[in-house]
Image (cartoon, rainbow over all chains, first blue to last red; front, side, top):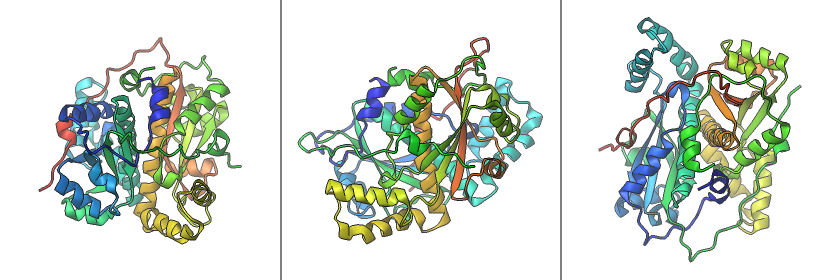
Length: 210
Length: 210
């Protein structure tokens, strides 16, 4: 699908057709497509839990304001953001360093420099950790929504859930923040889609501070 | 451009052609395209500063590890994330409420409910504020990068900068976090593009906690 159409046609749909499942193959294609987005030092601090089982979705729905779409959508992702994905010894940190050495863009003796740069930019304070985790996972989640539309699917990003309750129910380690839930499936064509909401104009987005 | 190509061809390019400017018209098209992304309660907590002037870009470059692309790119965005964009009385919060009342999806007497929901989900703790600001601005910034590619442009997201230094130099109020800088322009075809970096596989992204 042309990107202009993806941008225009992607909508957060409230009603999914519970009779139309999404194949495992398509979920894999969706996730691998989105995984190509960039990230801070290529650290890719995103992960997902995939819920398809009805009992699991009902457990999540109870913690998500009892929103029907959580159980009606054939697939729901619990999207995770690794707040510690910048630490020395973290598998992704060390793998990135090795790959850069192998590609010739860094030398082995730059390990300390790399670790300190990761720490200074992403780990120094709790606000930097949270920004690192949530911004990069935001890139990934946005790409999931676009890729879904491209593949003929619909989606709905959700914030209305009990963050700590979901963490506890699904045994999510403390190292992860849960920036959103993402329902994925096919829009229920029997329902009506609301008109798109307003957006800020160019002039409202661009600022200038004197 | 087909979305599959946008995903595959978008690269963080290190070299911009300084001889190829980007028109104001194209910048506007780019920003308005990206502005269609979803956000928490449609609060759109993103803004940008647009730098085109060479002296301005040099000031930024000095605070961004002296990376040549900061001044070589014809346009650099300082991307801002509003950490307080959930508060009662904030223009975007109140505008969203009014628009929902007008659209019939909320009634006037639900104002307290709406304000409390915003506060509970996005404002209760500093980590929630940061997650709200950076996740949503991550959606917007990812769309900027895709839209750039779609419009024939290239981009490079950057974290390597002195956050507080940039805030001070460009008079950015304390209410905003700066999740990234984004260089925008045309790849310098005389230079060589590195091969794409590795990405996590589907199996590495999907987690299961027992």
